Length: 205
Figure: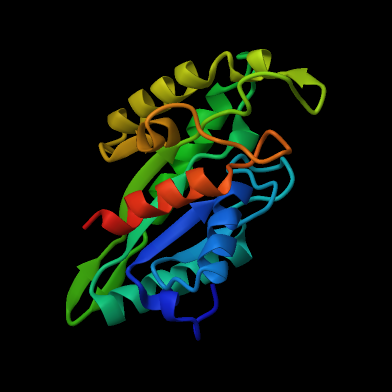
């Protein structure tokens, strides 16, 4: 989201992978001004795995938006979406995924902004992900195999976040009231699901 856009100073920032990128497209198509978006297609929170969501240049852009929102809106609420790209469906190597996500949340939470003689930090609200379509194949992987550990992943991530002091946590499944809907590729959320997530964010104080 560019500084000249109305949503830049909305008081809300969405950060995440391509599913969050979708939310930015949705906002543009429907002419909303509810939230700023900083998302990376194919993005990871784990460093060294391709496109990093909080890479230095991206992080600088996010920090500038945080500063602007606090100075102009008096607050900044970050909706930090866990990335499905940092999920090992074989359930063998997820510890680094949990650790990297918590570290990323801390990096954002600990950013300080001074305004009117007071110190401010963004409020962090975290959203866990759904996997993929319920049946069929996802790029050659049976959907049942890919989805097998989604609940366990989200539950463990929640526990680790609680230990680190993050209590504002929900999942896409909680928001939509069950299984998310997906586009034809089987991985990205469909417009109904995106709309429900946006409604959830916009209706929260």
